[in-house]
Structure formats: C-alpha cells, structure tokens
Amino acid sequence: MSTSPRLVVLASCLLIVACTPRAFGPADERAVRAVLAAQQTAWNEGDLEGFMAGYARQEALVFTSGGKVRRGWQETHDKFVATYGAASETMGRLVFEVLGVQPVGADGAVVLGRWSLDGPNAGAGVFSVVLERQDGTWKVVHDHTSSDPEPPPAAP
Image (cartoon, rainbow, N blue to C red; front, side, top):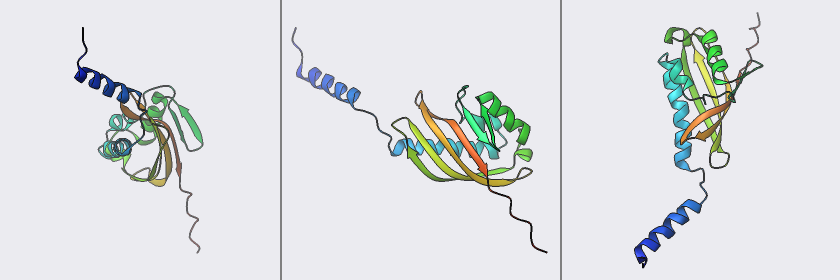
C-alpha cells in the first residue's frame, strides 16, 4: 500500500499545528474584554444571572471586596443579591473601564480596570480580575474589587 504525497503533506501540517504551542493573541484579548462588556450590559439590564455568567461556576472562584474574601460561585452570587438585589432599579448603572489586559500564559489573563456604579449603592473604585480559558470560553476565576476612599467632609 503506497502513501500519497498529499496525505503525507496533510499529516505533516496537522502534526505541526498540533505541536505548535498556543499563545495569547489579539483574539484572546478581544474575547476577555467581551466577557467584561457582557457583564456590564447584563448588570445594566438588571440581569444578575447574565452578569454572573462571566464568572466560573466553581467552588475555586475567589471574590474579594470590602475586606472580605468569598469563595465559590454561589457565595459570590448570594452576596451580590444581598447587596444589590436582582433588578435594574436596585442594581444601578455599572461602567467598566479596562485599563489593561495582561496575558498569563496562553490560557490566562489579568485585567486591571476601574468601575463606577450609580443608583442606590453608588460608588467607584478599581478591580483586577483573573480570567482563565475553560473549555474554549473565558471565565473570571478571581476578582479583587476595591472602592475609592470616601472624600473628606467639606470644610465649613
């Protein structure tokens, strides 16, 4: 049985592609930014479940805010519900400003940004989130959010 030259070339190309290490590229950065954009949109529509879809639904998720560390998707979800409710009138309007996306290998990224929220729980601050490629999609696995300090009272 003879092997066709075309089959040899095809097999060689497939082997090269399979052995070439994947790198974090521009499409990955766009996908990471799209996760945050989708979260912002969902929040502003009062869709807490849509917002939470950007987080990895796993016990290893870490969310740090207000000096407290929360572990797991469900604990993070429950804290959001307790603080912001699950409707647009209680959640307010959220704006993310991405300041940078830093790759961590081929399947990870750290995003540094600012957030601002108006409405009943108005505030602003900075965040850093770690996203990981899981089954071809990007999910937040670690979120550290902090609030800007309160401005000092106005002088009389």
